[in-house]
Structure formats: C-alpha cells, structure tokens
Image 1 (cartoon, one colour):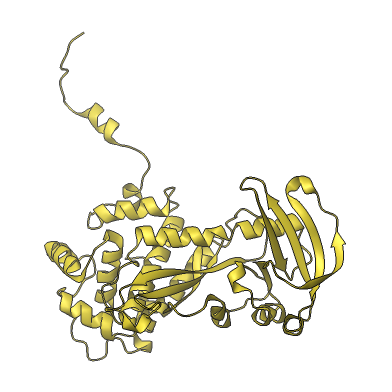
Image 2: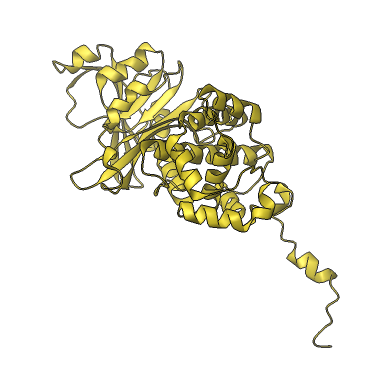
Length: 378
C-alpha cells in the first residue's frame, strides 16, 4: 500500500467529495478494506470484518484509521461515488503503461496494440433487478480494452447484461496510429469507420455472409498458413454507404486447430502474416478475464446496488494494476497469480517484499546451520 500515489488518490477523493462530512471510515479505509478482501479472497462483508478485527493490533500500521464494521463498509460501498476509484484506477493504469511500454509481445511492432472484448458475470435476479439480462436472471458485463504490452486494462465499462457488445464501441477512446483487435461480434461498419476517420487501425474477423467485390490481390506464401490477401470494397446497399473506403481481406488457415479465419482490416502496410499474428494475440484478453475471475473477487459482490458493484470492480482493477506495478518495479520473476497467492497468506507479515517473493528456498540453508544431531552414525 505504500506504493499507492497518495496525492493522486486524495485528488480523486476531493473531486467527488468522498470524505464530505465523514468523521470516521474515510475513502482510504474503504479502499484498504476492499483491497484486503480482493487479496485474501474474502467471501462476504462479515468475513472481511471478522478477519480484519482479528488483526486489530496490526491495522494501524497497515494504514487503517477507523474501526472496521460491516455495516459501515456496506454504507460506504452503497453511497460513495464509484468514480473515485475509477479515476484512481486511471492514474495507476497510466503509471503501469509507462513501466511496460518497452516490453515486447508475440509480434515485433512499434505501435500500440489493444485487444477489446467483454465478459458476462451472471447474477441473481432478485438481488440485482437493475441488471436484468434474461427472463429469470441478471448479469453485468465488463467491456474491457487491454494493452497487449503487459496486459494492462486501459478501458473498462461496467454495464447491464442487456447492453450489446457492439454499442460499447461508441464509448471506446480512439488513439491515432494504434491497432484495435476485435472479434466478429463487433462488426458494425458505421462504428468501424470511426477508426479510419480517427487514423487508427482495426483487425476484426469477417462474417461469412459479407457482400463484397474484389479490387486487387497480392501473392502470399501458402506454407505459412496464408490463403489470400485481397483489397475489397463493400457491395451491400447499406454497408457500402456506411464504409465507403476499401478494406483489406486476409484469409488464414490454422493447421494446429484445423480452422480457417478471414480477417478484415483498414491497414494495407503490414504483411498479411502479421495481421493474422496480431489477431491471435487477441486471446490475451480472454486470458485476462479468466485470470481476474480466478484470482480476484468479481464473480460475487458484497453489495447489490449498481454503485456497490462498480466500486468493487474498479477496486479489483486497482489491485490488479498495483500488483503489476510492484512486479515491474521490484523486478519480481514470479507471475501475477503467484504474487497474489503469496500475498493472501502473508499480508500482515513484517518482511521486505523482495524476501516474500524470492524464488530462492532458504529451508536447506537453515537446516544445514542448525545444531541437529545425526540420528545414525556411519
């Protein structure tokens, strides 16, 4: 927690008057409680209260300044603006992206590459009526954009389950020169044309019933899996008006899974094989969703209101990015999952962070220096 930028956190609190008329249990106390719940996999507010009160003699040194009570924490999650933690997550994300800016990934490319997708979290309809998804269940969606250098989430939008994935493109910030990799569920040529107008590039899977006309083609090396590289123009009565510019159509056969893919992009400079490799990197966003659902508490929520849900999601994002920052700054060789597992059992231990995450096993050294006598003499 000492690596949290306190000044920036206080700015976010003042921006939304988070501590207005609050004598006890500040926004920082709320953040520490929820971060503790994320790092130690707490199941409920009562679980958080019980565990923290059992460590009451260590809470002050950990940064807590108020007595932890589940009712107080529930009221804070219910009433305090979730935008405080969303803005604070943006501060941490900006710092993390600077740290990982020079990292490489599967494709050797100077430009920034993003992967965009969404995941659905099922909820109980009676407890979350505001998020009704189907007739008998509710759900929330996390529309997430990650930077493939470091797998840092750069944009997260929490919505009800009924929100279509493609409409989230309207909220997506467009960075000139960057690549956006998406699945075919985001095929909307009016929205995709915004990327072209914003001087950005997109790579998306094409639908099978796409109506187009070929204008040119380039030779490809079929031993690499490529099947065709064409310049096309949309021919449909509606799509031709929504996207009037030419598109590039790349066909690729993945022999390892015996499946053929067809990609559409507005980039005509990169080699066709690089386009296919960039789309393969889109799987990183799926791994990100799997990771946060496995290691963080976002599949079950401590509150039922939309403010409580968004507060918990954004604090979970803060914890993920904070662990990524610590890993990079301290040059820890362990994975993020291993770091969280170690923190879950040693959160209140007084030891240097590097010692807790060291890959060296000191048990053998300790046993060799002890005064244990030999059981057998040879």
